[in-house]
Amino acid sequence: MLPPKIAMSSAKDIDVGTRGRQRQLYAQHAKLYDFRCEQWHEVGKGAAKLLHDMGATKVRFEFQADQHRTAHVNHYVVNHQAFCHLRLNAGSRECWTWSALEVVTGQHKTPIEKRLALKFANETLAAQFKDAFDHAKEINRRFEKHDDEQLLYRTSGK
Image (tube, rainbow, N blue to C red; front, side, top):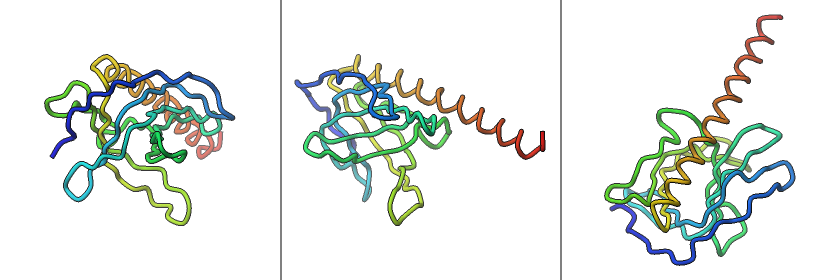
């Protein structure tokens, strides 16, 4: 069962700003679903954000539901064939699906694979998310390449 189409009358842009060492690159109101037990489950409406961690120099996706202050989903936006590859949900131009390895904190350090769907109020907002998400992947790809070059430089003794 795929996420149903959602009519959202309260879609709004969220001001872009800097909080501490994180720069908010993108924020938009949307509805999040996750896939578990062989079906889609609604997580809720909230803020879908792309945050650039200035210390780690990586961009991550975070979803914070309207009724909670904590993030429900938190993962790095990677340029990988199996993860963070946006696909339109069947029959909808307002909903993107993808898989990701969620950032885990606390006792369990092993990343958790999640399958997600994000539903927007209209096609335009969905297209803007895709552009921002792809830009975040490019930012992370550049930093990963730089990290690989630094590692090669350090291990080669130069």
